[in-house]
Length: 99
Image 1 (cartoon, rainbow, N blue to C red):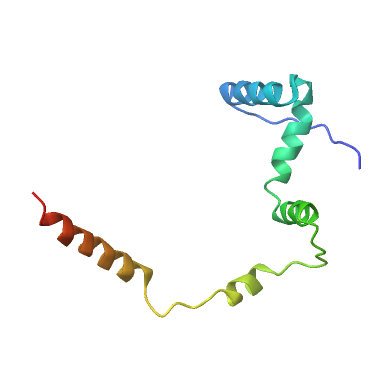
Image 2 (image 1 turned 60 degrees about the horizontal axis):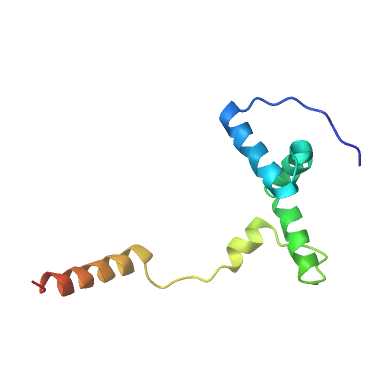
């Protein structure tokens, strides 16, 4: 697939920091376009999963939808807020006895 030339507006200091990163990683800032493309791909979940599955040598033909993932999550019998509150109160009680 061919490249597309585009214009974006970025804070100057952010761009300078990115160019320094590219220069340290690739030895030159001439690879900035490749680094931007790589960064954009990292936001693409499907692309990220494909790359990971290739590295791990997994054969994956389809990925679950967000709904399927949500439905497959384990259901808890208690509230996480309640558990955290009990842990904090227990710690407070233990520490308040120290002098």
